[in-house]
Image (cartoon, rainbow, N blue to C red):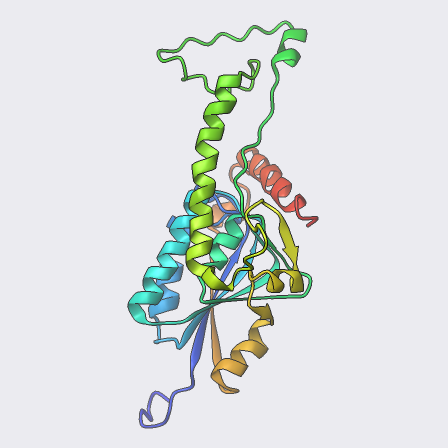
Length: 265
């Protein structure tokens, strides 16, 4: 085909797989803007694709990384005039749904879970545990809020109020993203921003998704039977494959497992 330039080129759709939790650390299978930047750039620019498809399977994670990744996708889509389609596998919840809103349309499986448009802060408290074991916690600060939500000290009402003052505006940012991207497609008689999740056809009915559809048949329908697919995704570094940092990887795995477990996965 390269030697015969007068022949029509087959349309190509770049496929970006976004699978895993969203975090700045870049450990394991996590998604971050820094790691994904070259992947997204290549997908949009290499070979002049007629469209970019996002294959999503994420329970969420960092709101900042979600925002950065989604914004990068939109900048390139608008700059290069390339349509973006999202295809959800098991789940696109919280930050995972934030990524889905970067697409022009969202297609899901009948068993996909989407939504969870909210913000969460979770942790543990150990003040009684350390007291029972004769451990004394010594904290000295310059600035009375520096030991904010210390897990080894009793929870303070002023700390909770301060945390709420952070979470509520962050929730508004998330809501603004969804409203700006989904707009009139959202059901007007439902509160979709409670952190609830919807399954398959329910998500379509409330406007969080555009329909039930899988990647190959839907893109073939949109771009013809001769459409080609070019996959892109993160590659784990050599040292990551062999667990060079077992302790931090174990902690990250527990945190990731907790996020997936929230959706029964």
